[in-house]
Image (cartoon, rainbow, N blue to C red; front, side, top):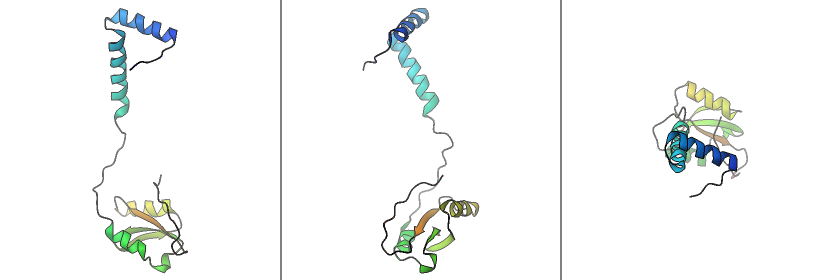
Length: 120
C-alpha cells in the first residue's frame, strides 16, 4: 500500500522517525494502530437478546382495524402500546420494560408498502 503525502507532512514524518529511531513505515503503523484502538470501540452499545418476531409478523399480516393509522408496539401477538407517534410509542414501551420494541405503522389502506427504520 502506498500513501501520497504532501511534502511538508512527509518531511515531518522523516524528521520524527529520525528523532525517535523507527522507520517512517513503523511510525505510520504505530500512529494508525493507536488511532484504530482509540476510535474502534463502539460507545454505548446495548446488547439485547435476539427473540423470534414470528408472532408479531403474523399479527402484522392481519392487523386489528382499530389500530389503522396508528403506530403500535407489538409484544407477541398483543398490542402493548399504540399512538400517533413512533417515538412516543417506542418511549412508552421501553418505559414499560420492553427491551427491544417491535414498532410498526398500521396503514389504513390495504396492502400499502411499508419501509421500516431505526428510531432516534
